[in-house]
Length: 239
Image 1 (tube, rainbow, N blue to C red):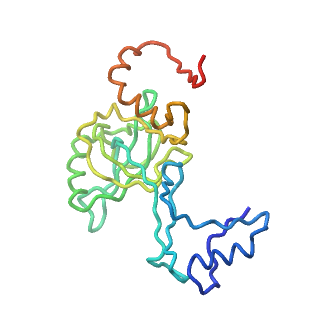
Image 2: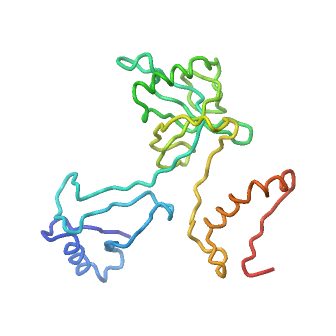
């Protein structure tokens, strides 16, 4: 199946180009002309990577243009530094990149290499923070073979596009330190799929709404559940 969203050889504006495409492929079983969506739309809540916004008055032109704007759905979470590389040339005396990870089932898992998001001043500060924590062995259960290893104690905030199938960060960016979080508390955060799905129709309670509720009552509920086998069975229509 093919999806078409524009017609390069048409001189009209975007809506006119789409109308021309609809006239051509209206009954085609394998080609769908994507409509121009004007109402509010959040691709991130639908577990999509993002969207392309186009000016409806624009003419088609090759190359980059301000008429096309790409919006990416970005994620953030805290991770722990387990190693780093040194900068070279003009960046000598500072960190080149950091290796980050998280805890899972008692192991320190490798999440990826982060080499952007910090300026020279921050890269120097990173090196000063990491050098006293240097160790001879990698703290990761598996991961990079070369680097300078540190005790996994420093927590940082990382922005990224998503996780790869191999469990690595895609397009990670350093956002800053997280002094409010203990390294041993850092686990991989999994994105919620279909957050708008209605679980309890009568109460109009969605999946994300239920998660928010549990988050609010967790402080009181979790201590009573600690150490007990627990299975949650959802019965929206009664037992």
